Image (cartoon, rainbow, N blue to C red; front, side):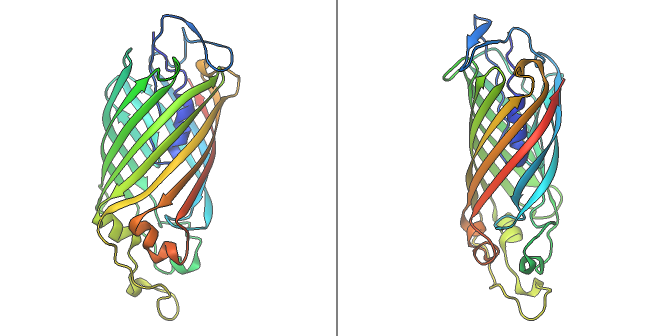
Length: 299
């Protein structure tokens, strides 16, 4: 017996943050299990076999990495399983998992992830930072690996570890980005589930130079450059953060698909060059916040 009925509520959370969607696939001798509030009958769900979730979310996030101004973005997404290939959303992209989930305690994932990075490509609210010009969008693509441990504290929860390793294929920053993460997901009732995710990002020297360097000659505003020159000190971690979300099925039953609502809040702390660049120290903040709300339909 496969138990996929709680995957959807994890999907929208990963749209706004660079952490993996949490999937689970567990089995039990009983068809009914008490989880927080009442029995959850998992014998038949819309998630057995092929399924697809499509939706849209509105996210509030900083206007660029290190900004203390916030903007609203509209983000479409898709998540599901087709022909044994898992589809999971990423921040600005998707992950494909080529290893079908099994029936056991541990599930492995191996696939490819891709995302569009739009740091300082638009919506720059700070008038000084805007005078240093916009960056080109990066298309980051690479392998994604992970492992999930099912039935950690109850028959339907999971603890997941994953890492995305991506290179810029568009010739923008031309660098390497590694995003490790750990997530715990659990149902709270038949119609509600929650998750806590902790993640970080490491990037190489090319990425840091492109995103965090300050070149006074690039300043196009009046007078001299108001920001001091900044030459990043090689590669390293750019941030570490945590994300908390709640998924609510609108008819009270996660197992039958239909419409679901997701609420998300996240915090990250910039590190290294991302924290030390004048774009952050003089014009922004090391503390970065994210909030999101979304609707999705599963069939």
